[in-house]
Image 1 (cartoon, one colour):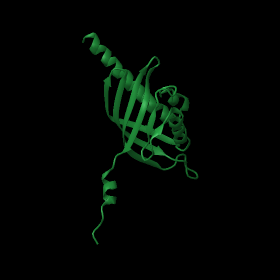
Image 2: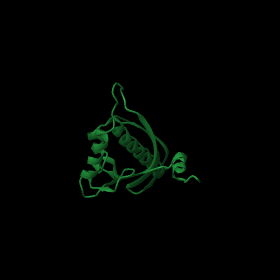
Image 3: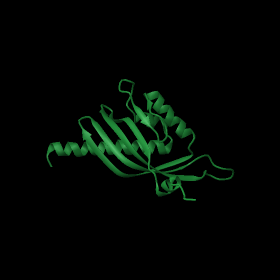
Image 4: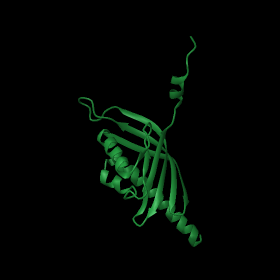
Length: 157
């Protein structure tokens, strides 16, 4: 393998590690670590779209949204599938499917609230910085399942 291919493979491995670290910080509810995953400062405006939410722009607004999600989610786990990484220069595009298992506040006597599964396709854009790869944009969109489509069909009377 020549030097150029070796560097490209190393960059892809670093981007994949940065993407995984982002989801792991969210799973742990580690706000400081999650904040460190995003581009610093406001010079490159970051953006985020959570499923069903409007576009959030600016580091403060984006990080507040994650604080809100963490405060209202007792448990969340991401199983990432279909991970694909494309790169050009100092920008990396990661697409993946988030297979999410989450639970809200516990009901009386239970350790966890009811668990809910959800599929979301996500696009994460990373930029290379002196401190490693940082998120520039996250966009998540829900995946409709067969049961969702069945609910939308009208039944003949």
